[in-house]
Image (cartoon, rainbow, N blue to C red; front, side):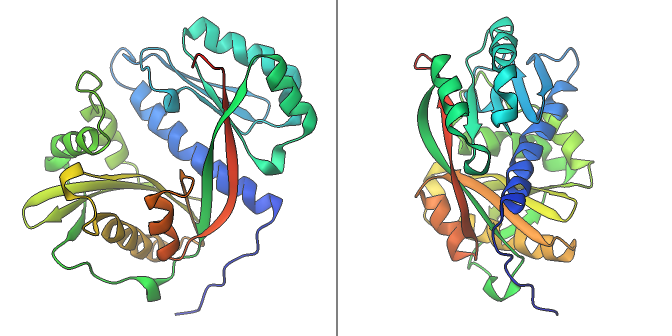
Length: 273
């Protein structure tokens, strides 16, 4: 097997990493929008290079979010604000270093936005030399008969309120899409965690993953990372990317698996959001 070298970070590569994060969330919301009657009120709109994701009936700010904003979109900021005002939702804006200028930050401040946190983007190449089995754990691709179980593990692991269910319809749509890989991690016959991966144009986005609270600290996320690494390599992915909270357990797990920090981006929102 030919060794794949870690590419040096450039602004262009950083844009590809950020685009993968946007693709993962946008395509999940496209699937959610296809539920009969669009019950979450999902709407997706482009403002220049920026992608605005809106879920009118889903009060989780990660689903009401703007990706890809830069100085070219300063003149569109009022339209973006109005888009969310009409949707009745607070929202946040991801501001990445390669597209940040003083003028953009000033424009955000003038509209009442403040920096509210940081998020880490990481990247790597599929490196099977770092892959090993985790004793007692088995990671399997999701099968259709386990879709309801997957939804239950998803909501329980992410500690989502019971009145915001993970709907069966969107998981079935993703399950039938060759870009997507959905996983359950099992300890014997007990499902203990889940993960997602989307591969687009040779870039594997290691998307959402979480472990049931009572099974954390037992290597579940390591097992899920390693299986996605294997599948990304087998699918011919040239780049693997992930996003996580800054300096979190997730970041440490990703770095142990061979990921490197690409950049830390800022999240901006209004104080009331």
